[in-house]
Length: 266
Image (cartoon, rainbow, N blue to C red; front, top):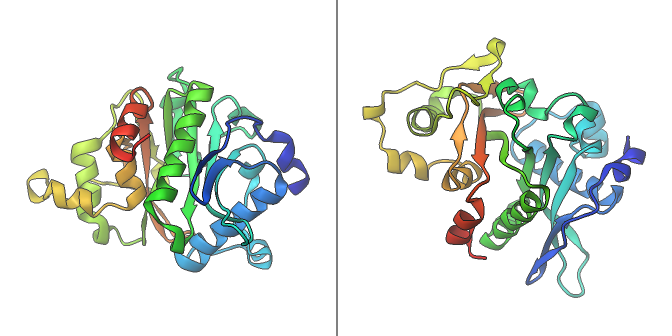
């Protein structure tokens, strides 16, 4: 698999540097391996995902999608210290999806309406930042990188799975209900959790929710999408392998640049 990683990389998107950090696309297979190793540390060691024997042996989180996706990296490069990959996002454009036949999120959500919409799609996935690097600077760079990628490829809609840590729905009842009542996507484009694992997000009535508090308690990544006008699909998916409760998030890219600047600065 690793022999094919470099062949499918997009050779585009100039680097953006801020201080000791740079965001850019992975340039070779070795850099993708570094991203996979970071994903292993965050998802398996920190958050309790259950790795396969192959993942455990290599201490890497990987799958077949890595071969066809672009990999956004935040690289830490202080003077006189080794270069490190400290943040990553996996990017799958709609026109590249037919190479593998489906989007990654289709194992959890039916996205047929999105695929039929005619929109230029970008699936975001496998996002993580090393625990000691979860700073405003790193998050700014990730968003700036995504913004540059969206502009370069004329993306109209980005989507992907957002996760709550843990598989007990009652622990996330307020937040899931808030998303259902305040951010549900229009039916015409809404993904839906696959029937065999569908979990209703309408757990609490709207009047029982403190909307401001519910928003503040959201995971950082989901909160970021919502600030950019994010919407959620119908139903949650409990992923016991990765110890998460997942929702599908959609963000229309029109105006995202302005919202980004207002929130994070240019």
